[in-house]
Amino acid sequence: MKTTVLVLLFSLFLALPAPGAVDVADLRGPKIDELYFVLVRDADSQLLALERGETHLLADLARPVDIERLSRRDDIELSLTQAFHMMEMGFNLRRHPWDDLALRQAIASVIPRDEIVRNLFGGYSAALETFLPPVSPYFEPDVTRWPHDPERARSLLSEAGWSWDGSGSLVTPDGKSLPPARLLSPLAQVSPTTADLAQRLARALNSLGLTVTVENLDFSVLVERLNRHDFDLFLLAWSLTRDPDSLYAFFHSSMDVKDGYNMAGLHDADLDVLLEGLRQAPDEASARRFASEVQRELARLLPAIPLYSRYAVTAHRKEWTGFIASDRATPDNLWSLLNIAPASGELAPFRWTLTDEPRNLNPLATATATDWTVLGLIYESLLSIDPYDLSDRPGLAESWDVSVIDVGGKAATRLTFRLGPDLVWHDGRPLTASDVAFTLGHLKALAVPRFFDNVKDVADVSVADERTVVVTMDGVSFWHLHNIGGLPVFPAHIVGDVEAWRTWQPTTESHGDLTGLIGSGPFVFREYRPGQYVRLSRFDGYRRLKGQP
Image (cartoon, rainbow, N blue to C red; front, side, top):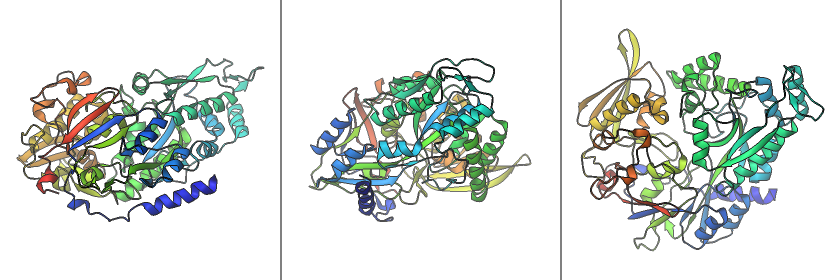
């Protein structure tokens, strides 16, 4: 089995196009008229749908047996890359006993990461000891490690005053027994490997003298429980970005708010100082130093236990050509959707497998990867990301400038974005610098949790002309450009009229022949049939169809 996996991994890497194989600046598309996100929950049914040609792309393959099965087919191509992925088991530090550092460190020592990766993924994942994946340019390998060592775990607890009663159950340093705890995990039918992982983790914790059971939940319910801080332990995977300042959102004490990303509720003054240093790093050298220090401190504090980082494996049918992939991007990306076309040359809809139900297609309130798989094709940002080297590419902005200025005797950052010409929303209205200014001001005024970290340092936004917006950011930070440039831009004439943004249901609104999901991206939202599919159509007014980069 091990030899088979290694050979398959090698063949997959050979299959990837060489970096730079496609100049994304030259892409003109989309070349497909309709895009269906087809809901197929069951893993076996997902494979059958792809093999029968009922769907054309299946992303995020996890089971080694599925990967090997598809690799033997001549009509399907596989691509593999390291992913910006992290699976973690988090603690609720607001509750005892999870606020006890010795207990968290002991738990880290009884989790057999390497065995889990080997048994569950057959080598398609890498055991993780820090809070950034190895593919990140800011990954720090030199951290405190917690290898599987049950004896060390018991020694850590004994030294901290913990003990065990006659039945082997843990007793706190002040002589109290612990109540049963629950580990929240997604449903097995939606994420079978994660559900299996949860059971393995529960057994490991129980071996230490804890009483932990798994509670499998629909993902939307799980997220709602986390947002309400109603949990003991949780199991969650994160899709991270190229920048490490996401660590600020996850672990700075100021981000422990309702719907915030500091789900663990970590409050540590020393770590906050390091996170603020990372957040305000003026240059790449400073950013790397603070990123390393933050990772080292988190590996000691363990507000969560990083478990593994998955390789991203995607399968697509060969009757479609033009997929764009690299050692950092599998074919399930926006660039591919701009470039793919049927090999036959005949116009046909493209069907992308969606493995979970969209729960809340409200771009202001949702943070799930499933929802943003759809929404990310409707809304655009000022900047885009090159799929080969992760560098900045034009998005809505055709050019940009970053400068340091003096504001009241303090250094600040000025970001100037120049929009491309003749940009329009899906309803035909012009997209101007005023929409960008509205988006930034609106997100900050509402303190929208998903975007709060991006806009919290916005000091001023001004419109120089119809195509130029100037953003002044408090302080000097290496990340200001990406924080602002990576935000989705919303139409002021639609979102500005939304009163209850948390409960907004844009898909049920009527705006002519459109819904409230009006963006400027390459696809227009048409309909969502729960349990079946989400249908999008090509936006004929999209800038890349008009020859703009």
